[in-house]
Length: 507
Image (cartoon, rainbow, N blue to C red):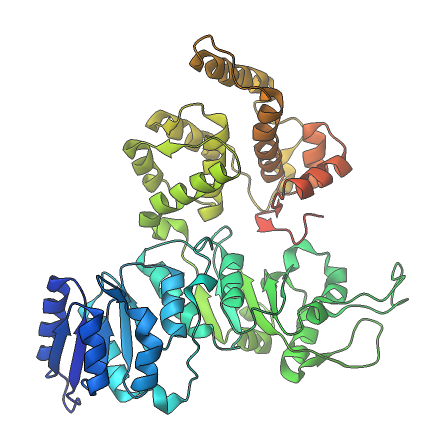
């Protein structure tokens, strides 16, 4: 229950929403706070009120029968720069939050909304206007926003992330992304870059866990010719490559202490010296860091510098594991199945019972594990509609064959689990395929099609099974390591090493 607080300034609130019930709820809530309220269900009336100077604060939906409120938001901000605008939308995507923020909204709230949260936003808006903080209004065309960006979810935890990202887009603040492996930390970092003011510059990722410890400083800061054995020429480091853009330090908790010391100096001074160099080099980058580790605990254990931790942890963002946002599973699965189909894999869908079963699973591998399952379903199951029994089988096999990120040696020999049955499984799938044509010959080019549909998932699953160790994967597959490397590049396969993404598909 919201109530007017003592001393609160009463104002006139404009409410625009084409849903009568929402207008009624907001009218009652704002009136309970002691405000005067004007409500409308169309953009035309809203704009007339703004031009007339009505209202001290606006709460508006996005889509109306006669237009899009975000299209006129720049005009509202220009006409009434002192009037805060709170945007609410049922289109709960990062793009909506960013679009609202970039066009001058004071705040963005996803629907369904909490009345207490609306009341808090109204109080903040009335206390602080956009004209006081001097922010420039950036007018972006909606076509700039890529709805294909794979940051997906309507769960409350994801909505809070969208709102946080939208507020960070126009800043250069250092961000620390924390989350379990497979939750999408690099996707969040890329979103901050692609929608931020540095989007014209490069986005340069580096995974600390994927680089030998003795080479990390060279990778970050570059080296001069002759700096060490094998340094036959000068090499730019990631700080130079990212100049004017964003440097993403993935798995920063795996950085050795000596490299941490050098990184701290760069963050403090804005300059660095390459390995073997003598001349300071200046850098202009935005730093986004990420880790699956507990850095506070590492600081207490003396494994991570406390001063560096506070330099990196300016704005923390915690990505929830998939088990905490199970309502998003159906949305994510549909997205991954469509993506697989766009990559010329067979189109699939799930029965209601099968989808419900996915929501009961805990997903230790998070979103990455769900995506892998979608690919397996697309390739290995003949049925167009995947039923419950197929999901039960896949989850059972996934649970029994999960490899610990701490034990690459668990793979053992180069023989794949169930290797003896692979031929029978493929034969069964092809027999079902031919049977479905009821005696008619399938389309021409079947040989190449089967190879395309089997090769990518075969390589992907093999790399996952070996913890990203390409030498072991090549032995398991019975192919040359260089052949595997070429196929990884040609098929654009992401290499996961010990539960973490490699920087370039190499070891």
